[in-house]
Every structure is written in structure tokens, then in C-alpha cells.
Image (cartoon, rainbow over all chains, first blue to last red; front, top):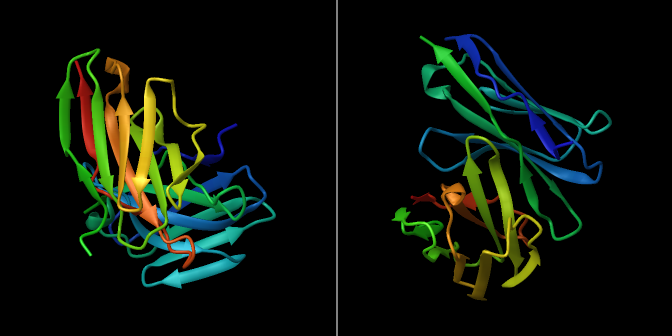
Length: 112
Length: 114
């Protein structure tokens, strides 16, 4: 079992719709959770982080965390064509050196 | 700060040659990570350092790969000898472990081994 799993997609949504991206992780000791966006040919950039169960909102983005289910998600409201990218889920434990493990990413296409 | 700086941006080499990738982390960051990204395997953690000390190198695929961090401002990832299957984008990232920041990535080195 991979440590961090994501559906590779592609996920295609129309402009203005809500895009929902999901991620599961295997290490119950994980404490910090991140969503990175990566445009083609570019490096990953952080868009959201969440540490506690529940929802965290930042503009059009909402991260959701459920540690009991080992599940983290990202919602993008009012999706724009510029949101088209690969979204990487990353998980970090707070022991063992604090290494950050990434999922393979979900490709999102927002159709104009 | 200029961010994480990697060099070279692109490298094309012949199979069997030695390849050295370089990384300068963000000043003040005390953790440094080397990742490899391919279409098939996604973003894989190869090795990471805390305070210049290698903590976990379990992701290093083979003995052909080695990494060093001689000081807080410089790290290298070396492949010797290189093989075509090493072709990938190699990213270096750094973070401030004490301040618990996220990891910031360099622009990557696209390696092609022919």
C-alpha cells in the first residue's frame, strides 16, 4: 500500500463548478497535511495546509481533514481554467525526522 | 530571498557518465529534501537532511545514488554511473523545521540520460 494515495484523474469540471480532490494516507501518526499545486513543467507550490480535524477555508479553497478515516480533501469553488494543474497531497509525521511524503497527484482540467 | 536554487536546470548525459545535481536551500532553513519526479512514479522522496545530517536515505534507489550536505547552504546529489532509467526531474526542497514551515521547492533539474 502506498503511503499517500490519490486518484490520478484526470478530473474534468466546467468553469464555475466545484472541484473535489481526495487523498488517503496510511500512517496514523501523521500530523500535518498539505496541498500543493503543480503546473506543467513547474515546481510544486503550496496552496493549503491543515493540521486539525475539520474544515479550513482560504478564499476559493477549502481543505478538509478526517484523521479517524485517514482522509484529506481539497475543494475548489468557482473553478477557473487557471486552476488546471496537478494537485499533490502531502503528509508529514511529527516523529522520525519529520519527512514529507507526497501522493502521485490528481490532474485537474477546468473547461472554459 | 531568491528561494531554493538548483543547478543545472537541464542536463543531458550519456549512459555511464557521472552526474552531479546541486542545491542551495533557503537561508535559515534547516531541513533539505531531494525528490525525483516521473510520470510513472510521481514525486518520490530520495533522501532528506536535518541540520546537514542525513536522516533517512531509504528512498535512494541504488548505490549509484549518493547525496551530501557539507554545510547549511549547499547540497549535492550524485549519480554514478548514470542509466537511462534515471531520467526524471529532480527537485530539491527546504523548510524551517523549527518554525514548522512548509517545504519550498526549487525549479528542478530535468535529467536526460541517453
